[in-house]
Image 1 (cartoon, helix red, strand yellow):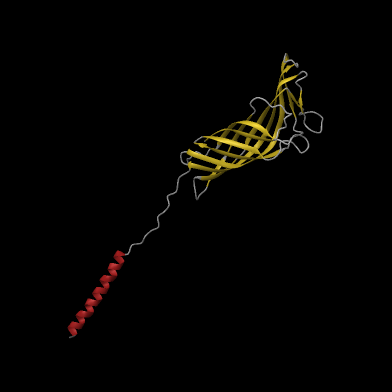
Image 2: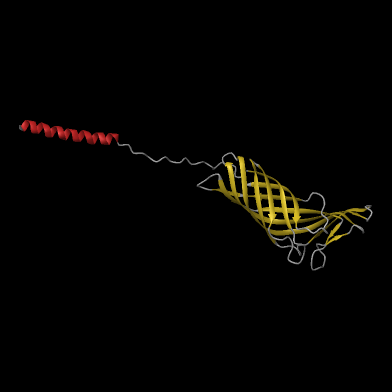
Length: 247
């Protein structure tokens, strides 16, 4: 009887030990899958941007004779910071130079006149310059929220929205081809005048871009008026054109 009890106890202990070993052997620790990080150290960040666009004034009075292809030329150097949670998204900002060139025909732009407001005078019935260009140049800082379909190669769909804050550094006119009222040339010389008197010294513009790869279409609209209150027509420049980016 003692031998039978001893064998039974031994069998129970052996079974318990094997059960423990089996539990340890079959227990598998599941490690959470690590999300593979995208290496963006060598990607193209679109640091350098050049914009060539067509420009007009919204709200321009019918009495002001604009003509020809008015344009904008902008150059920016941007710093791009991708989101850690989503490398397709990023924020970018940086300095640049932006300029608008508005063309007029048979119009005297009184940028240096000693008047309370800038005047745009139709001079078709007297001796006049055939072509006049009014150029404004800004030191500007765009701030963009960007999306890139393929941030590693900089190919595929891209879009961006943001604002630009600018400070006026120059405003001038350039007059060419002096002629009489009949259109006969009197003198083929160039007259330049510069003054920032009538202009707002700062501006804020909304902007957007969309396209593929390094070529996108851009648009911008100046939210603030071009001229100071009561010192010129209430006009706001807007532009559309092509944006070239790289680096």
